Image (cartoon, helix red, strand yellow):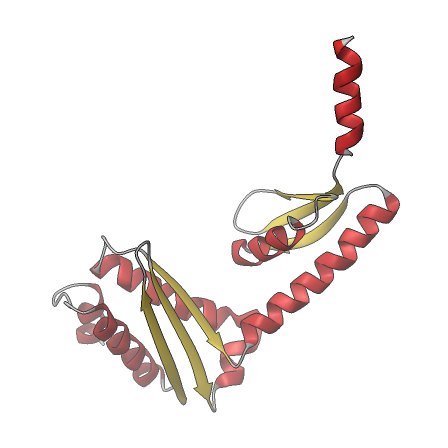
Amino acid sequence: MAGFLSKIFGGNKKADLDALIEDTLTGILEKGGFDLAYNLDIEKKEEATEVKIDFSGADEELLKDHKGQLLDAFQLIIKRVTQHNFPDVVTNVSVDCGGFRSEAEASLIERAEHLKTIALEQGKSVYYRALPPRERKVVHQYLAQDIRIKSRSLGDGLYKKIKIFPAKNQEIEKNEVNADEF
């Protein structure tokens, strides 16, 4: 095991990002005894390198358990390994298994839509449960598409609640400014 970790985090620096990621994934799957295969897609762009990994196999349900925490762990490990070995290369890593991430995002958006409707109908703030950063980003980006509503993260630490509230009417604000000018 020490040889595997030293290959990832030091010693032999890989000259090839693709080979490093392949070796890391293969090593983790072998050492962890996972019955999984993966599809690796690496797209090198000017601003960043996009790394997409999609797992499949008999242990898919294990990856999806506990709200995808094992998927998050794989994503974090690959991100850290690439940052350590290629500090000058900006990499965005996305790990999925059988469309789990898109299903989770759809569920987040559905709940956000429901809370947005309540906030608009009642004219007051509503709160979304505490979420990790990636999930909060999905909710905030979805809500930002509607100018009638605003959202803000509240709390300390990694998990924060989202406050969803109606935006002030832009026309009323313009009229108030115009009235003050006279």
